[in-house]
Length: 126
Image 1 (cartoon, helix red, strand yellow):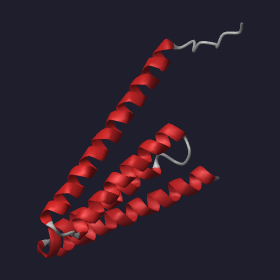
Image 2 (tube, rainbow, N blue to C red; image 1 turned 90 degrees about the vertical axis):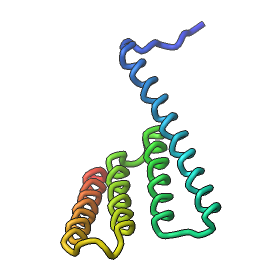
Image 3 (spheres, rainbow, N blue to C red; image 1 turned 60 degrees about the horizontal axis):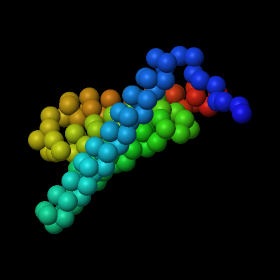
Image 4 (cartoon, rainbow, N blue to C red; image 1 turned 90 degrees about the horizontal axis):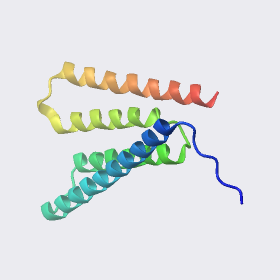
């Protein structure tokens, strides 16, 4: 009878186990938060752009967790997408009361993050 080889590094095994557990906790928390947001939208009876952007944030977090589990895709790009969506949501929430230079700063941050995502995607594919 042939036995499976054991990982010679027990610390590495333990850390991978902890990582997998924390990823599962993050996924469950994200699903719970998304469910609470959907419930709040139904209770309020209306959907606003900030709600949609928040759902995109939740979707991107779940996608990032899926990339970690499957190992397919670039896990570095998803946090950039999350940051872009978060800044866009911030702009929407601040609305018309926001100072013009702050809009320019935040839009510049989105542009910089988009360029970074593009560079990361090209570097990863080469």
